[in-house]
Image 1: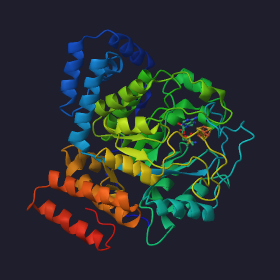
Image 2: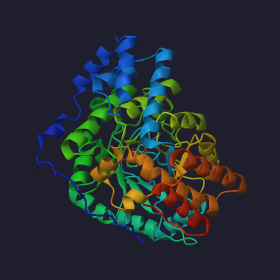
Image 3: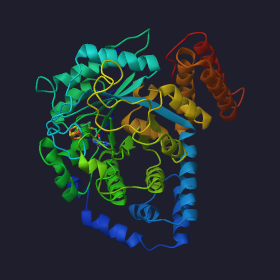
Image 4: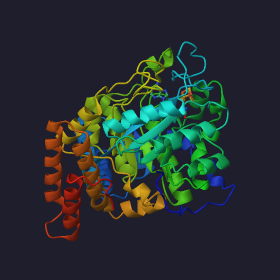
Length: 481
Ligand code: SAM
Ligand code: SF4
């Protein structure tokens, strides 16, 4: 069953719009970073006060925060990020699993094990039956949301393999369960191809610029279609113009100075917002991990300390308070737990980064080394212990609250009143259907406490929440509003 979404409500910019050339102005970014090196404590506290009004901060202000090294001031940045996160998102954390369908690739990104010159990597593109096995394995863990990932080279040559794979994911059934949202992370497409992709009912189209620094980009992407920096940078324009509602951007941290990359990501987000009336739905902050046979991945250009990484998360939270922040299993469990407090809104769990990793080939052909090896149950237990609410919700997407409609809902603070109940309903489903006994009890306790703390007895919303939780206990599934 493919979810139904309403028609998009996108304002198209004029074709040949020349703002596009202005997304990244290297000189401006370098100048902004240079100026931000000298700042006073009171300037920093002033920026944090402004950020707490939930309206974002300027590029210059973000640059100042990225340059803070004083421990006390850093703690104030983290506290402000936590404040903004709680004000907008409450304690919910959305869970997803990446699904690598193929590791065949014609590009030559020096940091990736899938690059074409890595001849000893075992290559494989999953068949539709194998995708079915993989999705079944994820459904058995309780997942409802998949990020489909592939190298750039598809069996049969065209994109039909991609479209068929998305259909195979949506069509898979196990014990009455199915995947409710497929997000996609594949190489940039042309506008007509994005139109076809939209017909597959994808959720978010994600693409990382890797590095926004053009000169570095050109040095690290040696061959193949991905060499074209501008075609990648313009991808979100083509996606949005083709009617894809939600797009996700991000840098791959490690390729160039992380402060530059965060500012450039903010510029990209501001450009999309200004041009299309809606910014990116999500920003991902993958960090480079050691990859098979890649010297560069062992010795990247920029190595961030944990503090620096956390500062990146916090500055993003303060600068674009309504944009989701995604953290993958590239980070250690401890860093991931700490980042939950700073504004991360989505995390992956129990990820495998090779085709077959969840079912038919647990060993071969991974893109990089995973850092968080916990099971889905263990990740969820850690989230519950930290008093956050795990969510498998896909409600907005299925009700057509996407793109600008989602932001219109998010901005008056409705994430808490809509997303939190939906998070509790989907988490309750998970607890009854999949969780071990100890986790089930802990989770149900968290749901009861959260309901009591956030929704006053006797109000219509509280009545609806109590009724739905009872229905879920009695076996009803897939309730959302
Ligand atoms: N092949 C497509 C592309 O490059 O856009 C899409 C999928 S690619 C498999 C997903 C992402 O993995 C890349 O965009 C890159 O940011 C990330 N990646 C590649 N090598 C990595 C490494 N060694 N450590 C962490 N992430 C890596
Ligand atoms: Fe291919 Fe993407 Fe890896 Fe580059 S990052 S080698 S394009 S899979």
